[in-house]
Length: 261
Image (cartoon, rainbow, N blue to C red; front, top):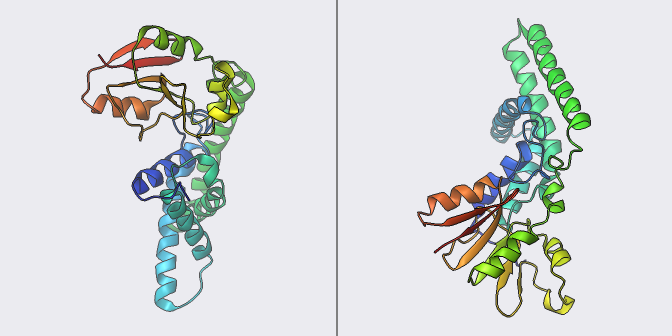
C-alpha cells in the first residue's frame, strides 16, 4: 500500500504504455528497433483499441454483450492499477500483452473490412513486412545480441564502481543517485554492507552520504546531489536539461557523472 498514490498517475500510464509497446530507458525492457511486438503492430493495436472502445459504447447503448469488452475493461483496469502504483515497471504489465494481441487482430480485421476489395493484397504486403522484421530480428539475435555491450543485461554487468569512487574522492555532496533501476543488490556487490543497515528498499546511508538506486523522469534534481547516470537514460537527461540548472559532467564508457558547482 505504500506504493499507492495519485501524484504521478498520468506519468505512470504514459510510461507503461511506452515501455510495453516500444522500449524503455533500459534494454532489459525490450530491444530498441524491434520493440515488444515489432513497430509494425503499433498502429493496428491503436486502431483495434479504438474499435474496442466503440464496440463497448455500442454494447452499453444496445444493452448487449460484446467480447471486446472483456479485453478492454481488463486493459483499462490494469492501466488504472499501474497509474496508482509507485512506478510503471514492464513486469507489472505482462498481462497487457493478451489485450494487445486482441487489439492487433481487431485492428487488422477492421483494415481488411475497410479495404474489402484489396484485402488480399493488403495482407500479403503486411505479411511480407512482418517476415522482414522477423528475419532482421533473428539476424540481430543470433549474430549481435550476445555481445557484451549489446546484451540487455549488460547494464548490470558493467561496473559503475570507478564512477562512485571518483565522486567520493573528489566531490562533496549529500545524496548520490546511482542509475541501477532500483536494484540495490548490484550496489552492495561492490560496496558490501551489513543487512541490518540495508533494510530500506530505495536508499542507503553510510553516515555521511545517502545513496539512491533509481534515476528516472521522477528523480528529484538538486544542486546538493550527484548523479551517476547511464548514458542512454534519455528521460532523466532530458529532464535535467529542462531544469535550467548549470551542471558539470564527467564521461565514462557507459555512464555520466553529473554534479553541480
